[in-house]
Length: 169
Picture: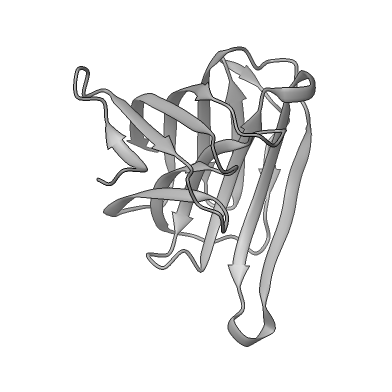
């Protein structure tokens, strides 16, 4: 825990992430737990917006410990609702590489949102508030295993994550 990631002292089911970084996103990994295929649900609530818009936050999965490779599913309730699913690969001397696998608008987002992610091999399905965001997405260059984490992108944003449930599938 730190000043940017902490459990609510009154209710230990609430996990806060405050992005105070001037260099980018904050990622809080669920360390020492690797997952292959799984079903994850988490409830999100942005309680402080950044000075920038839109504010994106979400879930990192199949991550390496050093965050050099991972998937990211993120949402932004701004501008009618947006989602983005991408893969990050740090290629070392070649620089960083983001590969967008799916993105678009979604009217499913509210003030508080339950995100569900279902991962089976190289196929991914995403739900917001129990409704599918898009048809499943397949990544031929799939990362097959890794850690899970929570993600807040913009400096100044604070998001509360609760009711995190992970089930192998």
